[in-house]
Image: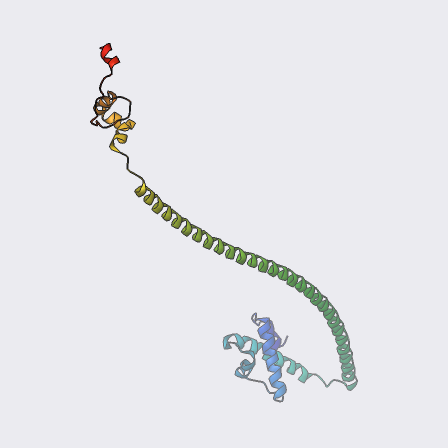
Length: 235
């Protein structure tokens, strides 16, 4: 085992996503700068993390690249026929991958189209339900407005009726007062003849009981007629 392999084996646990982003940033920088190894600061411009987290990942990626370069330096050049075969195989693999990808894309599009159709149907049903609810709401609102207008009209009519009733009661009271003023007052004797008056004044009632039942007439001076002969004989 080489020195670089020993270092890789003893490398601490590093976040997989951070390691992938660090390796991508290093390869991109090397491709744009003629294979030059970037610094940690240059790598962090593409990764965007703290140097404490970036340090172990950057060192691991750097050690991997150095290990690969060391192995390639000790190996002979790849034969042309092997390189051509490798390129052809790579092209075939890429074409197959594209076919599989296109098939998956078609399936995904078909599935997504079915989902969109279901979504449109559900949306149409929901819109129909909402339309019914809104129509019911408008009808109930119209009924409520009509009921409120009717209640206001009845309230106004009730107020008018109460006002008329109060005026009628006032006029009736005035009429009763006028009738009471126009009624003739009873004579004192008539008042005394009433049962209440008799009970209150028994002495006057007893005296009145001794009087004859005939009509009361004042004593008028009258001339006594001369008696006839028959009357004298009787005497």
